[in-house]
Amino acid sequence: MGHLRAVPLIVLAILGVSASQSAGRVEGQVPASKEALPADVGSIDAILGALNDVISGPAGDRDWDRMRSLFAPGARLIPIRVREDGGAEARVNTIDDYVEAAGAYFKENGFYESEIARTSESFGHVTHVFSTYESRRSPGEAPFTRGINSIQLMNDGDRWWIITVLWDTERPGEPIPAKYLP
Image (cartoon, rainbow, N blue to C red; front, side, top):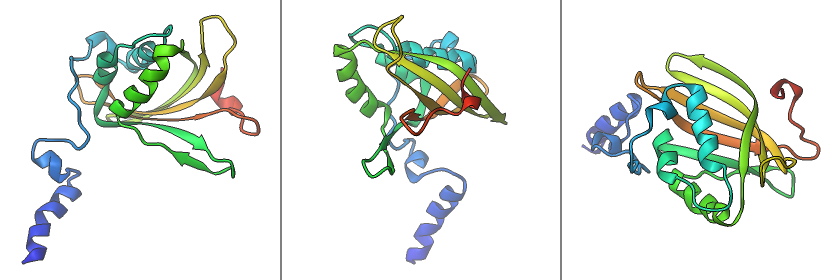
């Protein structure tokens, strides 16, 4: 009898739907506190520009509701951290994890991220973007770091959604390849 109860879950898994979605919830979903601005989600350029706009600015609070409105339910932000042994670890964050950690930093520190180059590929409703960035503490100063954001996006027919942002930073012995630079 136990194997019969598993059948609906297997069917849902095959269809790409979790049990929590079938009950009307998405695991890790936090409803956006406001709808996305149409100008923020109407194109890939717009949504990536809005993402950089939200996280960039002088020390102080950011518009986290606007940030949440850019991301699909269950979306993740994942920085790569290099260990002392040279290996790497991914720190998987929900949007709220990121808001809590980055929000504390941004309250005390200016941070400006700008895209300097982009490559992208699309199929159907999915687009993958490699967005090369520079980060500064104030406009006009030299960047303190550069890296690449690997961003997965989806267009549902009405708007663009960010699904995942995975990033790694340039470091000695690991320069950004020329094909990802302007």
